[in-house]
Image (cartoon, rainbow over the protein chains, first blue to last red):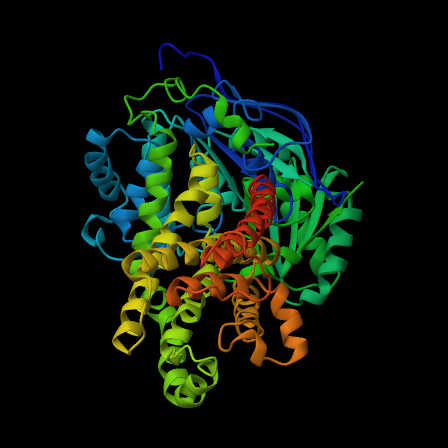
Length: 339
Length: 301
């Protein structure tokens, strides 16, 4: 990347997208993604992640602001942008009636991979996503994970310098997910810029160099996973309670008592409370005593460093859907802030 | 928006940036884009037995059963004028148009299927010319119509139908079938873009087919139909396709919905039929292109 040093893969300023029915899906996003970065766009469902990524990928026209992708304006030079990006939609997009090889070949032709390189390139990609053995089987025989991997191969066929991945692992089992993560990291190591949207903090934490958190069409936080975690401040004290009905009262006690000198954020989860405070370790036992005095039975106790999950909770007031198999039952937590 | 008007831009240094030794684009050009899509839709058609064979089943059943069940009565009726035309010969051009109609319906179903599989969007995000994408798909569908009409004409001939104008006439019937299919291709694609739902498109396209066929000159000459059907038949595109094909089949001026005489012989049928169908193709085709362009610049679900 010598000749393009320091140039941004994505440079977006004041991007807005309001649908014809008046819904403002994206409300003034400024973003710069340098070349080679693994960038994550994190947010809950409906936050505007997909709308933003589609706008960057020329599938939607912004109603305000400017976007440059690989140096090309997405509206005036849409074709040049399309030639220079790979895009993987949230819904797996493969032609089920074609074989794996035919799917990749179609993409190779669509992106104009030179004829003499095509066959090698197709083999190389099928190899990369571990589908070489089933290359001549039709995609409708594939499992969800295999289809997704085939989708990845077709998005990379022209070796684009920038690849958009819209929630690439949503709905996959952990094994299939880890496999994809591995490809993404490999591609990124080779110098490809990756722009990934996800609602999984773990995914963002493992993969991304830098993150933006999007909520209601606006970026509400930006930084490396480490920086974001640091923003939460302090440590986290998770207290599990015997009786979930007592959570409200326990939270009240944690908030009211002088234990944390009023610098604590108290959140209620499904089976207990989480207290974020500067000196949680030091004062944790005091809280336990206070709870016992109030006749609340504590069944578990843990002090830990903040995760992106906590960052997300602090910013959005919502616990994201962390549990892949379990669906949305982790999203019910509400934030209670001690003032 | 981001549709075809962006194609005039340079596509030279599209991927020449950013690093990797990569498999960069060598300009495909319009024909290349067209060919890629033409090939894809042909593979899909061959792969899917329902598309080629399945859509022939109904017309074949109609051809065989109608001629066997109604053949005797109908041959008598249509030959009252003394023309001595068998019902097989009379019906065959109508069945050829039925094939076109069914293939036209399948076009929209293919598009909606592509939308549901995400392939529509996947194609839109490639640098291919969108016009070439849709032309390639339509060309594959037209190829299918040609093959299917030829099969039907062959079967009809085996059943005893006689193409009075011979091989050139058979080619003419195929061309009439293409001309006739395009407005329905457009209509089913419009249904696909508007509903974005496979069931609605299939039901819409199929529900339309049969009434359209029956309230036309497809199965009986206009004068044998009740007054209200005669009235509707005049405005039914199927009448024009069938009359055009039938004129070639019988080597006669068969059109009675529009009477012209200045062109001579079968051209008195062919000219008005072609004019009506072309006009319809252009109007509905234009609407389809407009809607597809709009759909492709806002492909979000």
